[in-house]
Length: 173
Picture 1 (spheres, rainbow, N blue to C red):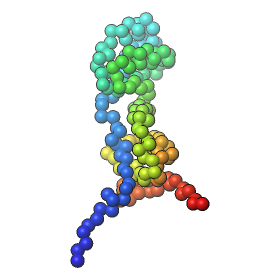
Picture 2: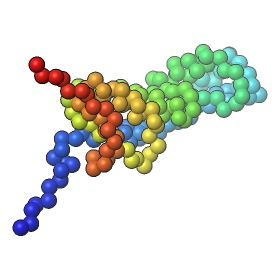
Picture 3: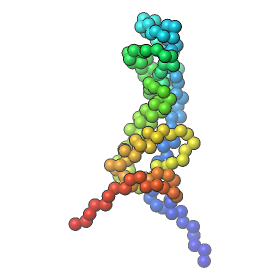
Picture 4: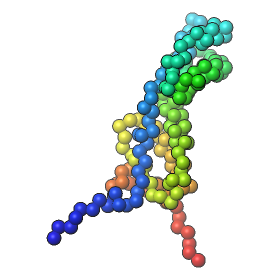
């Protein structure tokens, strides 16, 4: 009397969200303002504007651009803004900051584009194991976005989860 094997995880109605799938597959190119400084200290506006005008911006087509300055120099805010004004017409997104901050902003943009209505009253598992370095921010941001919709949110793998959130049941009258 062999009973057929039943995949209880598959029939549980759990929806798994794998944040690794939101990791950028597109290249992230670096734009270091240090290369445009006089003696790696001073930004000369006229020279900077001319250099940006002559820069090959098409190389950023369909890619992310991370703008930063690796030199210990004071960079005026308008310099970052000027780079964005050129690069944004080609890049997926132009980001200012270090690698970690950039990844955080990419995740925030991608996760903000989700229609969370699809998770109304669903039981969600946010997958825990990944091969890529998913920022902690992605887990917290996703949890915050799911809370108004999901019946429950768990962390881990469908076969072994940690409860994170459960909507209280409404009392029947």
